[in-house]
Amino acid sequence: MLHIEAALNVFLMTMNQIDRDFHLLIADDDEEDVEIFIMALKSTAFNGSYTIANDGIDALNKLKELPFVPHLVILDLNMPRMHGGECMQQIRQMDRFAAVPIVIYSTSSFPGEREKLLQAGAAAFLTKEFSFQKIAEQINALLDAYMPTEQVTHKQADL
Image 1 (cartoon, rainbow, N blue to C red):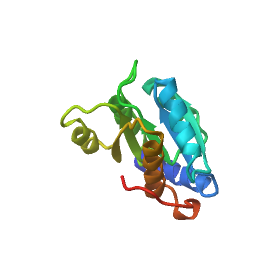
Image 2 (image 1 turned 120 degrees about the vertical axis):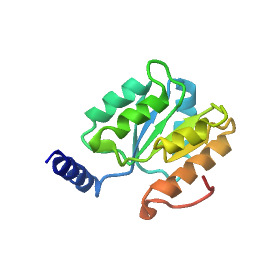
Image 3 (image 1 turned 90 degrees about the vertical axis):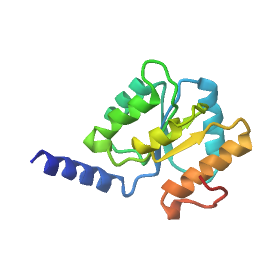
Image 4 (image 1 turned 135 degrees about the vertical axis):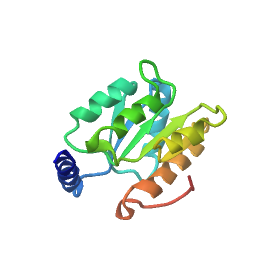
């Protein structure tokens, strides 16, 4: 019975989002990285909305507060209070958000970490770039991959 209720809740949330703009949840503890990401986001075809969280715990709290399910979650990996990988695992355990694509966006380059996170449920693992143009290209690739095609006005890069 719980599975039917969970499926119904996901369906109702999806129906509530049909006319809703594309929405991102971005969790990163580095304010400068967030500012640069948002500037690059605004330089792309993105015409949706976003919510910013300061760490994994804040991301979980903000997800619970949203009256809708975001289309995409972007998590920094190395955050205080809760690691991005742990946050992703907790999101995956929440029926309402279990199907939301989660992208890990990090400077981390530990061997095998990318594969481990992809196997654990990440839709993609992107290494943070230091060039504004490269960040914008990464964002365009995310939009191409996850935003409905009628909302994307141009394409630039592959993930």
